[in-house]
Length: 536
Image (cartoon, rainbow, N blue to C red; front, side):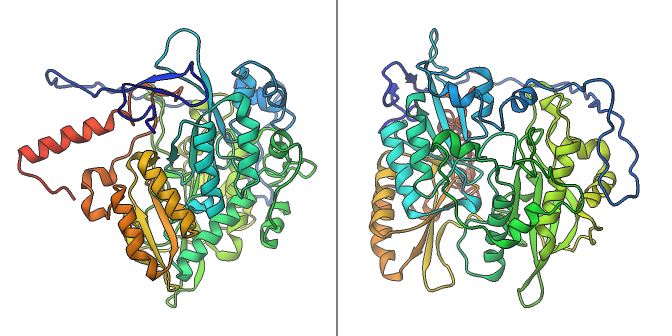
């Protein structure tokens, strides 16, 4: 099926004849201009921090007689009855869209309101849904469900994201509850995939059965569970209060409920988040030494498994303060790589994570969302003060950061041994967009062989648990659909990525996914012209 991200001259988004998306015809330039840019750096203004006192309880922000300035989103959260109102009313109205407050709140439920920006006049609204899959794990049942939903209620494609999740575009408001409840009832969730809380926790997608990789995935699962909202707003809105929860490890429940050092709101249905949740989105990744498939330093928290000489996990190195985003044309905003915070023994990791989250919750800026990410707090305070405050919530000192080997980018593409007798196969997907013949072939293979899958941070897909006898027939079918071994894919395409951007993303300022095929062709032509045919 042709999509708004394909090459057709126009495409109708399913279920709504009013939404038409014009295709992108390429980026063209008649001549080249040498561009220069004068950079002006403006210091980010923060309130003067109070002194760190050597006490066992956290230093809370000083109370003042004047009402602190807050962004509009903070007011929406405060008045929402824990992210319910007015969303619970807005989704029942006959209008194709929801109001401003509900638009902010639905993010916590894993959805964004969008409209077709290729059109002028009356806006054609739809919703993008994003799943939450710690470590990119997708059970067979959920994959087949998402594949069906894309055809029935979306635009006929699935989008794999850099945070190892699905995005489903083009869902109409009248179908939201049906789609959400279907995902929930089929081993999935969208809770917390967007909004001011912990997003999907990354981990290496390769289903390797080594102790380190298994422990990284287990840790990602536990961190995701620890920071999942507890007040039930998600289930109240989409499945009328019915809960679809699996049992949690006792160590997760214990860590969440522990308030020994002032991390919790003891009388709140949200013991970690409270009524206001976090100042801004929060991103965590877990990995093992050398494997930087998760881009560890770009996260608010980066967690690295540290093992002994026998490969037994002993603890974790923790990085803090990463984030690549910035506001267009506002040079006081900036990307930042995470820096070392310290080392914790493995039994303390959940308490350390909660202490870092509580520090950002209580001290991160809530007046201006452009400066609300934790990287700005650390940049303002410095790592020493940040560590000191986190240690008050943690209740102990961080141990010295342990030396790690150099990082490597590992794509996990191609055929590999899992370590349990089975194989896995990593497949490249251009920009994470699964549609057309590729979509049908993947569905046929995953359904026929009852395979689980994993999504990689490079927007690719891994087929897991493949018996050796299945390798040849699966390879043949995949190749016929253009899903080739990575050695047959242009290296430029293997590492190129683009966000969806136009026509549906409200934040886009230019083309991305629709423009990148033309850009790659032009770059490849230049390389061929200068006889540089193999780009590694």
